Length: 302
Image (spheres, rainbow, N blue to C red):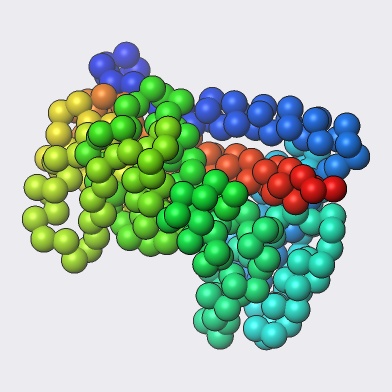
């Protein structure tokens, strides 16, 4: 492990920045309360996936800490697609609910795209409804941006990283991170205006491409995939990956690592996020922010 004080780079503290976002949420929630408005979030969990349950419980706790009305709906893994969509439609009609999130992944017999499309765009605080994706592409700020890309952007801006004009390389092309973050950082807006390359498992000469990056975002889902030779000196590295690896010496028998070989890469960077304590905590913070935004937008005409 790297010893404290041996690095010339900056460690980007996701916990500190997430707390800043949450403090903004607290102020907005207090302001909404003056008008008798309490933001509400419904999270739907299908089945008993351990990781999903952990995430759902964390979201529920954060809602309660902030004073957001939290509804946690748990459905059996054998639930039909029709029953799941009916549950979503109930939440769509519930005026106390401003945000709806269906925890992924879903059982194989359920069409995830149909589930996402069933959520009202105005309550889609996860940002994956086609209407919100289109708004992001069209630079319409009334839509919702997926929480992890939004968190990545906030980490960069709060750390003083110059995004405008930067060469950004994103490893991973999922809608959850890669495609959405590319659309976000290409926008003609503050905290954007970057030149973005999206690379993936089929990209040729991958290391040559990543070495050009001023800002490298790793979201490829492979533990310690990015090595020192893949990163240019002075780059900023955002590690989105959360991978569990066996470690008999760890308290739980495993530990979490990112998609970046942190110990080898960190000394070459200008700034880097740790795992854990980097992007992960930002995702929940931005979900809270999107829920508060939804409450504000939905009540604006009242």
